[in-house]
Image (cartoon, rainbow, N blue to C red; front, side):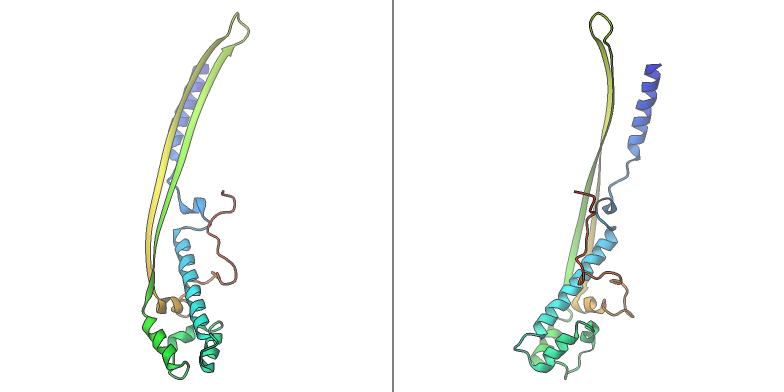
Length: 189
């Protein structure tokens, strides 16, 4: 009877250990792969605008250029339709030079999950003359790996276009400027 029960348990153990799926980013991070990429791209968009604003609002810039830089916080898509009178010629030259420059992201999300399943049965008889023991055990160790490679390339112009709600809702709902984005679940070490 005991051996039949043990046999059933071992069979179930060995059968169920194959049910473990490959590890996914959602198991470790707050979001799935595409959302992680979107968050990073939107952070890069905001960092680019911060750098442009810092450059335009430096004390040594002409007043129209500085005013234009201060207005970018509320209207970042103004950069897409620059007019000659908006900025000084040197600044227009720099912005035109780097407009089609870009930034590339290469993500490698390498996840590894170890699953160890084991069962053991120890039998002993303490009421006899001496101690008799018998032990049975089995186990399965399984390792699952998932590697995801994602590459994204955006020009600086494309990053600024992400601010235009009519053109794109790519960063809608993501506001890294107001609060830092979280990538990892709080219940994980």
